[in-house]
Length: 154
Image (cartoon, rainbow, N blue to C red; front, side, top):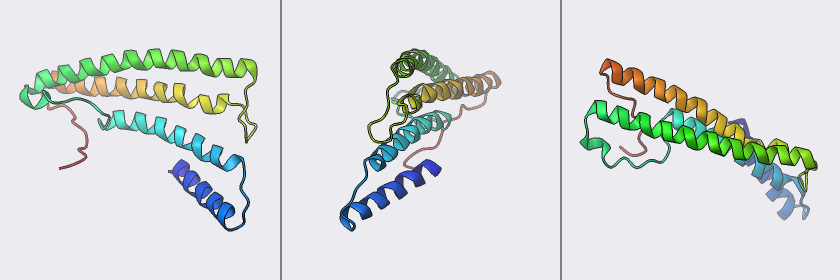
């Protein structure tokens, strides 16, 4: 929520400055952009927790609860592999930025702080996936229905 507020306030102030005061800053657009990147990656982790991420679930209504749980666990395991690979590659980008001392154009802050949003997001997704697998495994083992998450439209 604070990052959303930062985005809205920064954009509002910048629009006011640009159209009313005929003056704009270099850094405002960067602040909003990088805050949005962090919001997106934190949101991806939250989506995994709530099962709100994009998935193809056409066959899920036609299979039994136990099979559905196994399918969801396998899907989460595949997503963990993706998260680990993406974490590794994105971490390399952050380390390269630190090595060469890259800075942002307007803020003149180390670019590594903003590039770190990607590996941080994948690390958070990894831990949320582990939590989801444990939750689903317990549900399958006890014969309970798996957590289906919140639906967008009901």
